[in-house]
Length: 441
View (cartoon, rainbow, N blue to C red):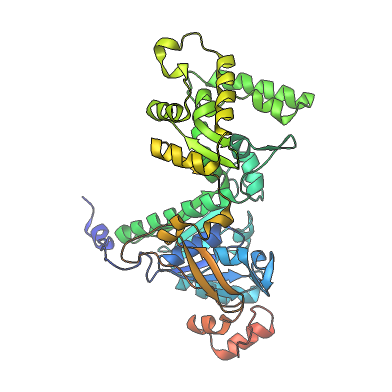
């Protein structure tokens, strides 16, 4: 049993139906590029009030393919539902503004390059000591400890360092190629949002904030989860031998494809060769997924081929040559019909299948329309956009599609007034180029 003081500090969790989960939660976002901004947007979709602190020149994403000044598709895709505050964080005269933001906030998000937050006095250790109820969420490239802790990186570098790039198996012109160039950022954003939610729930119980630590490297490794488990009894010595071989190949200048061939896959090869893969059709490509024997039988029956491996009494002695012959035979069968025909045939047979679609085909897709996966956003300066709805649905309108963030630097004065600064103080900060304001009149 806890002491009387401990009991008084704890608050019961009250679940309120038909309200947004982060309603009345105030978030300060010191973030740019992808992971922290997307996390801030997720929290805003859940009802949080988010102030995004940007440099006086704006988040770099604002300028990547600008449609109108300070607005781009990339920026809009990660920064909806926020207030924007241009602030020169490195200027000592910005400290009163930073202090006011920290006192206002329930949550602070940051992804500064290693060491910069400490230099400005807003690192997680300092903030935790000064603001015991504050929840600090931070994203680092490789984690806060270890030999790589002080290195800067972005997603493609993290994909290489984490093994994810090799695990995905994409090779272009003999070189390893990344997947989507920000895939680990989005995984990190979702993980950070989950961590913030957990910390808020814990604060309701204990009255104490805390630090949520997410790294791009751990996020990328999570995406390669299937290949990152090792039996210490069965695999460890084998893996050491393979690593020695790969290191020799690197010294000898072996091509990446040759190195890949030295690494055993955690996946089951017969599955990948025939039953869990993409196929070329007469007019495109399809993907099929038959991870169970029952689905494999359905697939083989639908295509009209017999696989001896599906019948244990007949599979003795089958080898790689058999598998290669079977694979080529099935590829030939699938090439004989159009994608839509195979999709219909296999769906009727109960086999998971889809035509391989391009992202731009999804904007008018009946499935995305039926589930409200997109919504129309009216931007005040850049026009109308069809963009993704919140990735999570919660009944009672718990997560709601957000409007565009107001045009850059147009809310500066109103935000600082809300934080307690008067007009003269705001004018002084503008004159000293600490903040930036654009007159909307």
